[in-house]
Amino acid sequence: MEDKTVILTTLNEAWAAPNSVVDLFLESFRIGDHTRPLLNHLVIIALDEKAFSRCLALHSHCYALVTQGIDFSKEAYFMFPDYLKMMWRRIDFLRVVLEMGYNFVFTDADVMWFRDPFPHFYKDTDFQIACDHFSGKPDDVGNKPNGGFNHVRSNNKSIEFYKFWYSSREKYPGLHDQDVLNNIKNDSFIRNIDLKMRFLDTQYFGGFCEPSKNLSEVCTMHANCCFGLESKLHDLRILLQDWKKFLSSTPAQKISSALSWRVPQNCSLDSLRRYALPPVNTTVEQT
Image 1 (cartoon, rainbow, N blue to C red):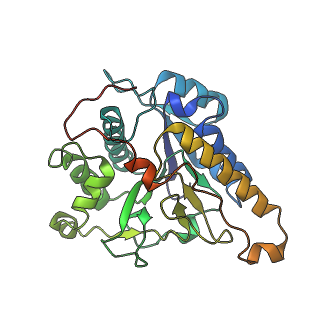
Image 2: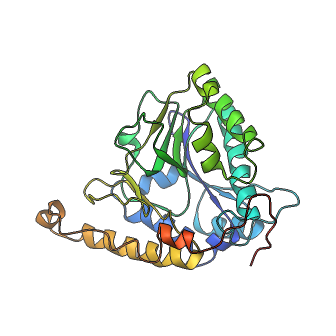
């Protein structure tokens, strides 16, 4: 964009397969309210060769991020070793983007874009991030951040923050980037570098953990609080159907409270608790 802002997402083979996550992700941009032009600023970061090939068939801006010795192509189950490696590789790459002078909006590919989110970003903020649960106060460090959607301005403060975030994985082994962020968000280091951090309201930036209740205001919806690709796809397809129903409704229906999401269904916090996750520092083979 004119201010050197780029929209970024990452993609592996599992999410790039036909009729999988990336198709729904791109469809949301095409049918959203003033979101189609944002595709001109979206760069898809492919984590493996097949994801890169599929990206080239679907989109204009693709980048191959190869990590030697690690196969990111298969579905990376939540909190399993491959998942953790993928999340930390992402954090390190985003630090490089900031060092290149680009502001970015990072979005997981399972975030559906229904409206242009830029009017709802804070203007004076270095780092702002969506939440699994929002307290109602954007500066409350008690909010539960979700690393799947954030807006970051490129400056010395944000670069140092990403270095600190990445290095903190050693202090908290076995945790993913989101939980590490939860542990460091009130650290004195962040205050010392004077990083301004804000948390985004789930009214505009919702998810399955805490859905946006107003379809007339929602900008994005994230398939968080979900275990397994099939469960995620099931609920995302229903989410898009609900959005299309909203778009085709009358003005009176749009301002009424009659229209609401039918999700989550297969996705929920209970779905995460139902699975025995691997203990810290334990290697579990992908199944």
